[in-house]
Image: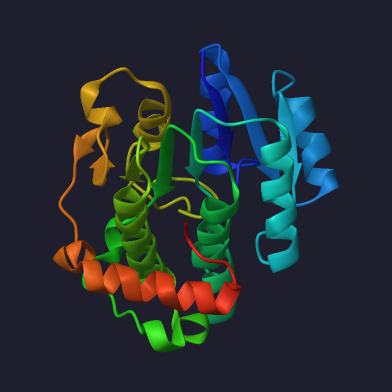
Length: 240
């Protein structure tokens, strides 16, 4: 049994991953944007051990989420699943990049840390100097991949990886999505609890539990460092 926290878990992949992990006998903690959604989530999944409440678009509430998670003790695994697909560049920055960065900095270091990525990051443009006002979904996922790689370098004794769920028919993906929904969330489940040696390595990206090729800029350590230095300035929180 593992102790696992998942962001963005009232619907979609985060919810399905949480449901499966509870069914597998794990101690699962989920996240809801507000108290009303937390009540609904508790009714749907009574096996939840706890629900962190907070809006990832609001910096102070992100810090409160970290405090709630830390009050439950150290997690075995954390899945940074939450994300938005919107034309609002600043909202994309706050939810898709700043929130997982701050939570990574503030929550006690787990044994496994999983970031939800996307193949859409390949070839995207990322303006680090203006990241807070220039992101689209694709470039936000390039930033997430860079963050994953930087954290993999920085966190000893933690398996840090990314998972690409594919284009799956969730609320975000839409009804036209043609990828395998079950494989989409099982990738998160596998990385967070499996004894498979591949799931316990660090610095990789997986698609349907298989290694996935990614944009080679992600391996540029100077690019990784530049991103995290900028995020430290913007959030006033430094990655340890």
